[in-house]
Image (cartoon, rainbow, N blue to C red; front, side):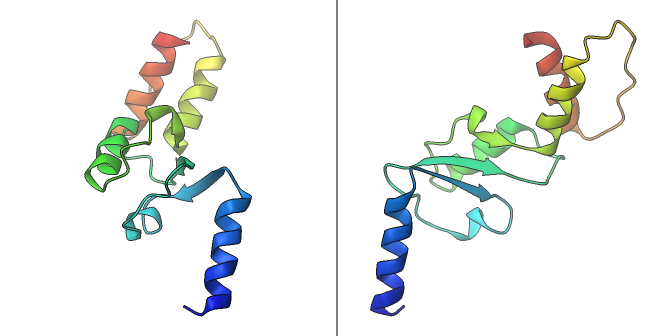
Length: 109
């Protein structure tokens, strides 16, 4: 890395308080969390639960990522479905991650 690239990288890190990273194939390639920054993880993988991602973050040294800083399609869909507040039964076909997220939002929202 050139000095110019290092300066630009430092300016980028100093310019923002929060960074959003895709998890699979992006964040997992890094080996050092950014100190003093808020980390939110976004993923397009709905097969894992949010707790699965918290566990993986901790295994990789990202101990500062709480479950409410992880955004997945399962979480978004479950949240939206839970807001419908319908008395009609729901037949949910999907991954464990979607099911866990849906039932969490049904119970706690």
